[in-house]
Image (cartoon, rainbow, N blue to C red):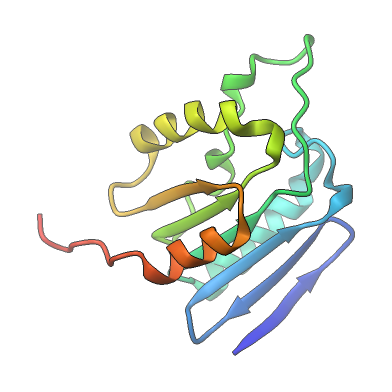
Length: 144
């Protein structure tokens, strides 16, 4: 059963308790997703994820953008996965803004190096594909 647990001008957070999946939908006015303007939303996300402890996390950032500015750190120092990497879910599907395809390839390589070995993160450009991956992904082996 899906229920919405939070909503503000930038994000909606819902929880599907049956699937043990939390869904975070960023809204069109989220702007530049990797700037520090969304610290409050990140705090809400952390709070709800840590309370609900979902096994899976679906994050739709497709309405957002990421503008690389000459006066900021290099783009590769701002990673998408860092926003979610230390949270408890062991399956994380990120639907990324269309202008971040090149960034996502680099980001995915860094995520593999920095994530907990029991966490799998995948990037998508399509919500249906992300949901399919979350639902059909094989469970991680517990053997060492």
